[in-house]
Image (tube, rainbow, N blue to C red; front, side, top):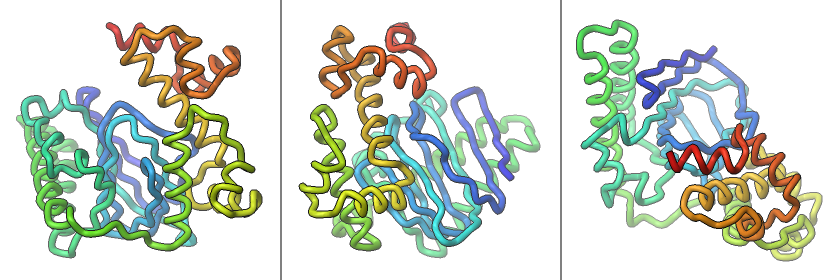
Length: 277
């Protein structure tokens, strides 16, 4: 069961109770996201890495970062997800860009000690109670709680910033290397066979491993990265559509338009006009 709390279109909080659902589609969005796992276990793809998420772990997903959660052998989980914009925090949004913020340093996962877990859960509970009671000033109180959570996370991140990157398993490390390669070379022709040759894994095993670890087939992931890059170029440049398609590695206008509309829910030109406004 999932409960979704919405505030002014710039803040969402979702509680799930004993669910086994997976993200069904490739996923990235314009809002910041924080994800706290209460119980169960999840595999999570964020950016260039895959993670095994355990109770008490707090995830940080920047804007436009590709991510997807998938189930493990543990059938059920409970989690709380917060999405918010810089507009919601107003002048306090500077904490998102602080040099020690997890969103700035690319720290996607913090494994919190027990006493910090308790503080995080108290803050999240306070947000939910404020929303449900809607007492005077509840929106300001929710914003204050979110700011407290961001600063708490920044301080935790500061203490681990110089620690070496560790992967939960060799499989996660190998898939993270493949993901990094796809992200850096998505404009070039990439096939399952070329990935197989580069990373010394049979095509069948690579395909199976990629799907079980990330929840994507390699084709789904590559397409998602290409559309994400096309969106960025539509927002940030005046390039014509042919040049954008060439840059992201999609050369068939009909195919490009179809998958762009499916993932973005609008055409490329509608997307550009929306962001120009």
